[in-house]
Image 1 (tube, rainbow, N blue to C red):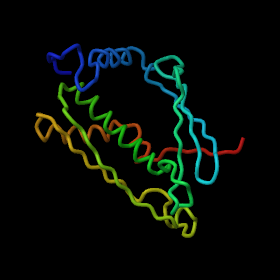
Image 2 (image 1 turned 45 degrees about the horizontal axis):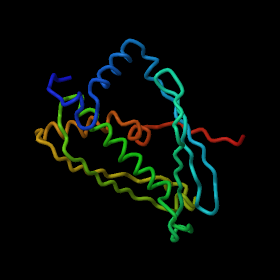
Image 3 (image 1 turned 90 degrees about the vertical axis):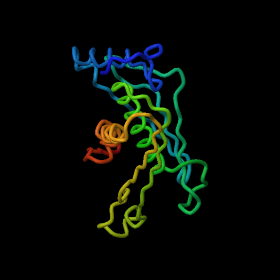
Image 4 (image 1 turned 60 degrees about the vertical axis):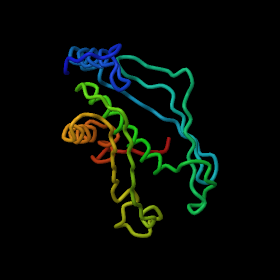
Length: 188
C-alpha cells in the first residue's frame, strides 16, 4: 500500500486503515477470511418471487442485520410476468456490476488511486430455447456478458486498465459466473 496523505484515512469512501488492518488480521488468522452467505426465497405467483437476505457468517462470527433486505423478482409481460421489478437474469447483471465496481474501488483505495466517478454498462444475450428446453445444445444462461467501464480519475490509463483487470480477477461474483461453481439443488 502506498503511503499517502488521506483525509480521515478514507479514499474513495473506503477506510484504508481498516482495510489494511483487515488484511493484516487475515494474514495472522486465515479463518477470518471464511464467509458464509445465505438467502431464503419464496414464490409468490407466476414469475414473482421474493428473496430475503438477513444474516451471514464472517470474520469469525454471525452477523444479523437490523432489518432484512427483501429482493422482489418478476418477469416482463413478454416473459409472462407482471413487470413488478427486475427479473433474475437482470439481478445477475446487477450483482456483477456491484461486485466489479466495489472490487475496483477497494483495490484503487489500497493502491492509493483516487477515483472521482465510476460508471459501468453491462449487457448480455440469452436464447429462450435453452430455458424452455427446446434444444439441449443451447445454454439457458447468458451467452456472454459485456462490461464497459467509464472511470474519472487523474490516474494514468494504464493504471485504470490494471484496476479493471484486477477487479475481474478479485470479484467473487465475476468468479462465480466465469468459473465452474457447483450448484446443488435438492428437494427437502
